Length: 143
Image (cartoon, rainbow, N blue to C red):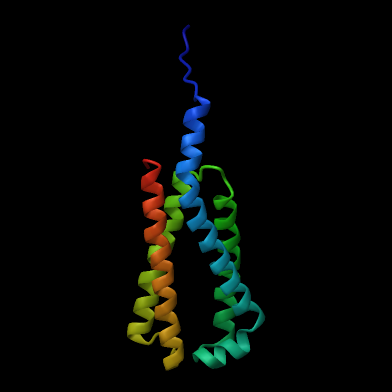
């Protein structure tokens, strides 16, 4: 029986790690912003809810999700070369969040105040921006 093995040359690994730096940075920024936002929603759901015109319970639920999600994205960002499958899931989740946020603002779901509507749209722009940057970072790796 014959087996075929391929070896990865150190130069190839170094080049791949260098190509992954922008993706890691954008995943890391996404993780910090997302987890930070989630913690604010958890810790200050009442005052933030009053400002945005959103229910504090809703914000706590979103905050818990965002905090966990941000930590998981941070774990992915710490890899020397983030795996393409999980990275694509992050990108898809970011795109879905962007579309859902725009729909929420457009249809007035959850009854946000004017400040809340503006915040939702700003948040959608940031998350959509992360998705675009992450797509470009993943392409740079050839995935």
